[in-house]
Length: 234
Image 1 (cartoon, rainbow, N blue to C red):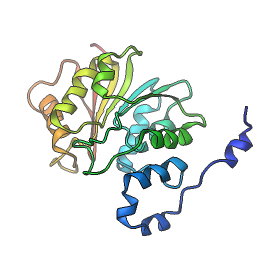
Image 2: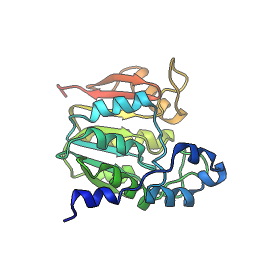
Image 3: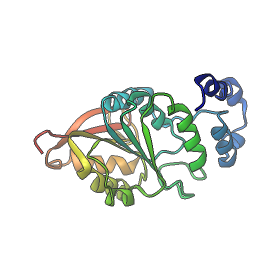
Image 4: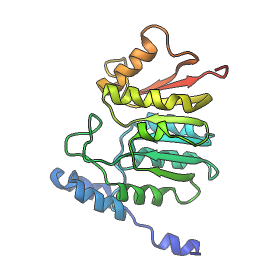
């Protein structure tokens, strides 16, 4: 077994932000460069959420025993969960890491499974939750889910209307009473919000037009994020 001192001596220190910002965009955003730099620890995961959203994710995950994140990319949200969850908890990370980013990312943007696993593992190994990786489509994982009831599902994968709606349809039955589902990029054209048309349309159809799904209701909204809760009586 390695000593704590040995582990600390092997940690990579990211390049200073001032140096990273001077890197030409064509290089900084190149998938192969980012995969190498992320994997060896020269750059941190690219943040895909706002600071208020990070605060909310930490609050939601703090006492959760089982969290499912759909759409990992470079792992910035996974790191937030690792900072909040206990060593007894389990964090399931689901992403196919395919070349087809769909509606979620800019054309040409993608992450690499190996680099993301290294980056998240490096940040989460000291006191974080147990990590379970699923390199697959989230809908396929949900249909064959044999894990425990879920405390929190974070939907941030396929941003198309059909893909986001399918994530909801497949995963919300696995959420325990009192559990939450958080939709990212789901507040386009709403006061104080932004997001994408796909997740926004799904949340609007489910929770803002007519009757919401039985036992479910909106709990929190901040920036692009909408969190819904399953009632205790369902």
